[in-house]
Length: 341
Image (cartoon, rainbow, N blue to C red; front, side):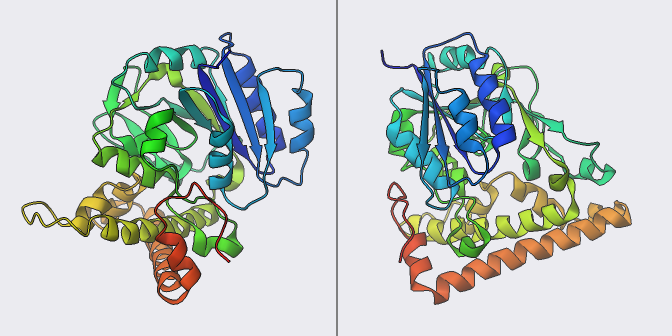
């Protein structure tokens, strides 16, 4: 029987949290789904963890050590069979009715993408400055730095850029039509090949008018360890985001090159405003009201802006001077995800 949902979990060296993620999936009563684990070259006990669940008929374990999150996403998708695809991170725990709620959501043929609350489960009490890293919209609040999202307890449409990779649900044919994901989460030695991950996909979804929806019943908890609640991690994350922003900007300038309508706002502004919601926060850091914040927060903001700019400049230079990077960035899509040589 063809499953109604394919749940794909890319993973790398997170055996402990992966076990909890898998257990949360199997705790769901709805059974007509397949769970695909894609091991991206783990050296810990990831394989052993998956073997514990090997008796489950709907579990598929795959191994591909090609670097990057893109590998797990596209390898998993290539082996999937369901009309609805759900990508989860390997450090989340979904609620017990998640899969059933997902089926109900996509029974509405108008829906192309969906997500739900992504709530924190902190390993330790977070520092006070983390409160300043949250932002708000009319829908609710979010912390893009840690992929946390809380838009309340009512179902409503949202901008596709709020459908994040840890809780990413999409129709199979829509994923194909949009060209799949872009490169993401490259190891440091290959950071010049970093891309904008699901952001590039959801940006295209928005431009095509795809409908994305926030569903409270698609809630999950995201494990946030102590290391992620440090200024050092946030600076690394800002550098990473700078690389992503450069990747998006380069591809978008080429993608929109034929557009001549001067009545619209500039392409660069249009794209920048449509980027991952992180960018809304970084824009806010340049406003005058930031000066009213505590000195510690202003210092953090300054460091993050500098790190983001450094990442952006790093990638711009790599694109300019490295033919392999240029070829990689300008690919039509990344269904073939092997790195250039």
